[in-house]
Image 1 (cartoon, rainbow, N blue to C red):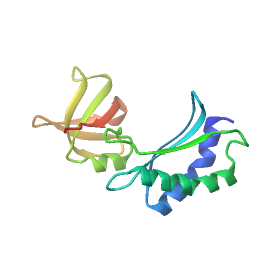
Image 2: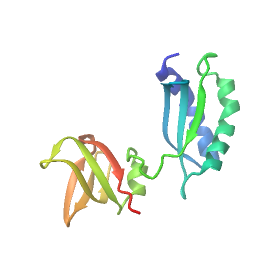
Image 3: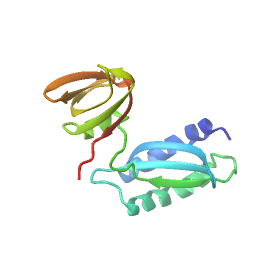
Length: 154
C-alpha cells in the first residue's frame, strides 16, 4: 500500500492514543528498511522518553492498529522511539522547548556568507526565528534552514 495512504490512515489514531497517554508525536514515518516495512512513531514528553515509555506506547498502539489494518494485511513492524537529544527543530513546540538554548542552523544556501551558524534562540513564529550570535540578533526564515538542531554540550 502507498506510504502516504498508510500515514494518513494511521496518524489520527496515533495522535489520539498519544494524547490520551500524555505524549507528543514528533514524527511518524512508514518506510522500507532492510528487514521490511516499518511504521515508526517518534514520541516526546516533558522530562524525556525512556524504554518504558516506548514499550507503553507500543502496547497501546498494537490492538488499535491491528483493528485499523492500514496496510490491508501487508506485514510491517511497529517501532516507537525517542527523538534523542539532538532532535531537529521542526515544529513550533520544538522551538518553544529550545528558547534560550544554543542551536546550530545549516542553510540550503549561504546566509550572510555562511552555510552554518550557531546562536542562542531568542524568539520564533510560524515563518521565522531569531538567534543571538555573539550579541547580534539575526532573523532567519525557517524555509531557508535545511537543518536546525540543539547544540549538545557535555
